[in-house]
Length: 234
Ligand code: TIU
Image (cartoon, rainbow, N blue to C red):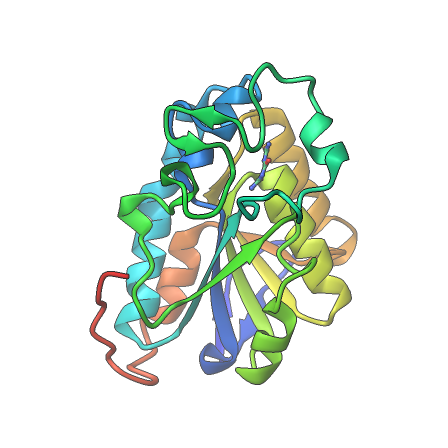
């Protein structure tokens, strides 16, 4: 067991029963010309989460701990995209339309890829999800149960959309979530702050919040659990 100094109180987890969840660190959200920018956002606001997430990813990989990535996106025929999602925002260019990084938010297109700095290894699970929450219409819950995971360390974008939706879904399914505040980011600093406040309010109604250095410090004493695995590019 490790203990992480977190809010509203310490987060205790068993490293082999813990997975690092890296949510939607895709070009479509972090780079120009993708879905995030089409929604009218300044995508540069998400970049600061990349370096700390990479550090946490390296710490998990070095110890053979579990890592799961998610990607938001749709099949090429958009059959898994509710028409309401496509219509939302009255965008000049939206989901399924062609942009500078290929068809927006469509699986297999350049914009759908996870950014190079956080590219999954071939051993790491990648969950494709059509919604904001990572549990909706995916195999994530079954995979976590199969891996005997009870705790999730949550990183990714954006704090108040896919991160918070996923944390709420996870919480209702009995998973304990630690959100790393410097490894999540939003296009709206005030919504980022509010989303983190909501997670940890009321005795941790949805989970815990901490800076990544607190987790890294707790992991310092953890030796290799199942590895070391040699990261290979996907
Ligand atoms: N728009 C926005 O803030 N986020 C999304 O649409 N998806 C995710 O958060 N991944």
